[in-house]
Image 1 (cartoon, one colour):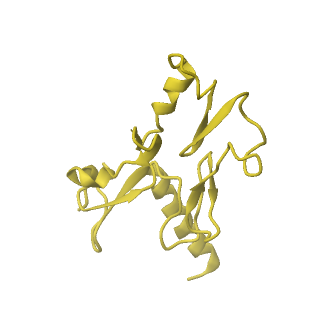
Image 2 (spheres, rainbow, N blue to C red):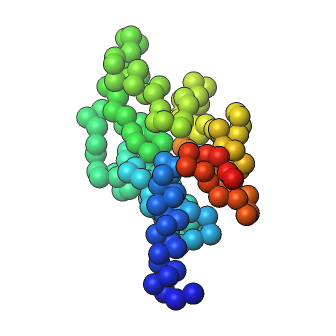
Amino acid sequence: MGKEKALKVLSAKALIFHLFFIDFCVAGTAFCDCPDGWKLGDDAKNCQDINECDETEGEGRVCAYECVNTIGSYQCVENLNSNEPPEDTQILMTTCPVGFTFNSATRECEDVDECREDNGGCHQKCTNTMGSFYCSCQPNFIFADDKITCR
């Protein structure tokens, strides 16, 4: 396969990948595009959360008081150790990005495995990714126009 044709195939795979709301690496290819709040890992295959609260990794001090790193983002909290009722900024800590759920025991956002319930709505194959998922078809099948059903 020539270089130009290989790039077209890679571009097509990247486009298909983005259609399924995934901004991570495409398995088996050289395509990686980490979303905001993430960076490409040392293995050059997986995206890793950026700890915006870590002054050496983030952009320096980002919050006036407490900074709490979350998956793909961070939250600023005023006086985390206060005995007073929580402020709006503290309540925000329990919200997570789409594709994640808040674990009250660990106080962290955890990935939701969309493929566990109804195969993620996919007709054949569902692959869970950090914060999302994508559908694919078995060999010798292609997507129908809905990008979920295989024919």
